[in-house]
Length: 434
Image (cartoon, rainbow, N blue to C red; front, side):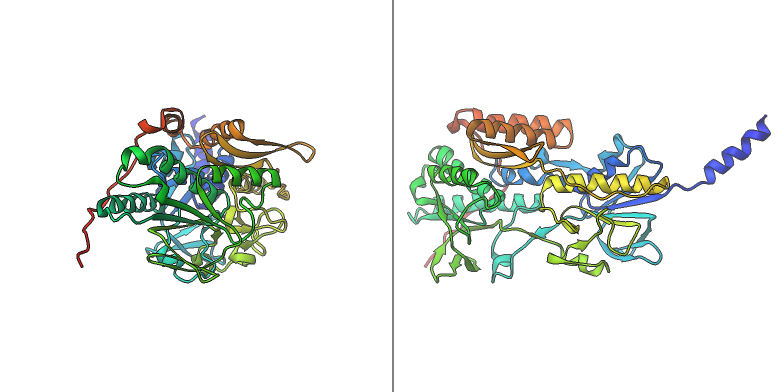
């Protein structure tokens, strides 16, 4: 009996399972990973960082409402729930489609049978002079922390100088990120500044939101846009609509009209672009440098490579938001599971679940999609509660959910003058002598 069993065991041990490599540990990459949990494959998740940052709440880190650990998830922890996963930190610099091999910046290589490109996007400066050098973005955890410390450095220096000059923080871009950032900064000024910065006059601390079109939250319904604009103005945010930025300087912003606005901090929240490194991968690229795919999300001309999320461009393009990334990643994983078992792939169909954005405490807008192309549009407290619930549920890990719930509850429900902003290191101000 033992003689009949041994050859079976030897054959099983010699069999190599298909190797799936996922480049990018964001929404799309992790969604693809989870969809392959029950598949007979081995997965390697590749990312230049060791953590996933929950981007929709990074503005809360930047405005001292959350700790960075509240919105980050250690990517190696994915193996605790999914044993067919391993992790490799690294920056992919090339893809050899003949030998099915990735090249890394450190000189190493990695072979694959199937590849999912989910590397995400980065800040888009649209060629604006000085924007990359002199403004701050909030697309990564490091950027959010740098911005947080710059904001409080600016406030500390203004308080120490005792010059009486106005203080201005400029946010460029009135999409969801810009609106949420401006609203959070305005509430920080309105609720806490009188108590923690008695040297500064809140009325002379300006939050300016700049948008080149004539509306905030452009993709939203008109009623929701109007509510958001009104809520921002009620919080003292100065809206500069129909205003373009010609140049960002070290000390402020030059508008297209020729007007210059002095500002201690300029925040860039205008949009995203595909990282330049993607252009070196040898993949077909379309609008905005995104990798073009067929209807099933396979890269055009490459039957074993998928591109999903912000980096992919399907025949029916979807917005570069969380839901398209989550659904696209899940779809790519399912198509690989089908290919492994000899089944054909299926086209990707996006199910719109709606959009939402918050302005601040008990003020948000939500457009929730329903079956039959219907939707429910919410504003105010109920929209804010829906926003809060969904964002906490979407976080990875129960510790993150609990920590975020506690910190946001403390921030929004506790008396405003008793909140304690979460800040880092602020350099000592050295007065410039004339």
